[in-house]
Length: 144
Image (cartoon, rainbow, N blue to C red):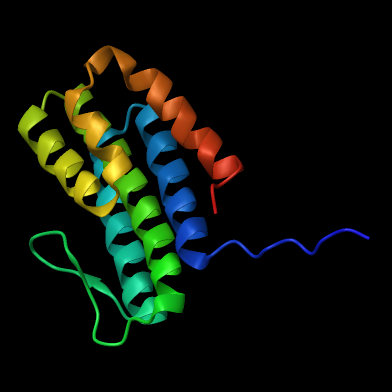
């Protein structure tokens, strides 16, 4: 008997959808549109987090909640990882476009949300295409 598949959280599905759309726009040479998609995507994922998990990200990139329980903390951690993934991809786009300070702010924000993203702050731009490929593969098989 096979084990029932776990449903993919809505914030993970949303992050992947926005990520794929932004990368499609980037690959088509529509960089301003890709940037707007990343902006809209991060806003959408944060709104989902607030609606479904009752958490918000404050100005210092800290997770805030009045009602978070131990049971929901794992969901919040997964949501933060997906939001951070979206921010890293956006930062890589900004780096490619020459906006390194903007990219650094996005990477720092991602690192606050998901400590495993901190290594991005020391990456060289040459790794960008490899990283984007890995991000797309993550959306095919999300780490939930």
